[in-house]
Length: 92
Image (cartoon, rainbow, N blue to C red; front, side, top):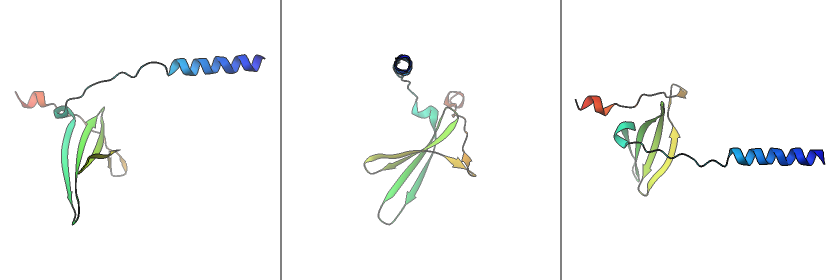
């Protein structure tokens, strides 16, 4: 009986921890976009866009039908760190 109470307590705690709604945030494309990379093949072309989100560079692979893949960017075998472009300073 004691084990059952402990198990129920653990289940209650685990569900209550994950019960909070996920906070949504919006990022402006101009603030996180770093560069475009085009790959051209005989049969198909791809566009890879590099973005900086929370100090980590990500690659978004675009195909004919939209986004095909999102992956972290690596440089010299390590996750690529980045700084978002501050377009507000550029416009001044």
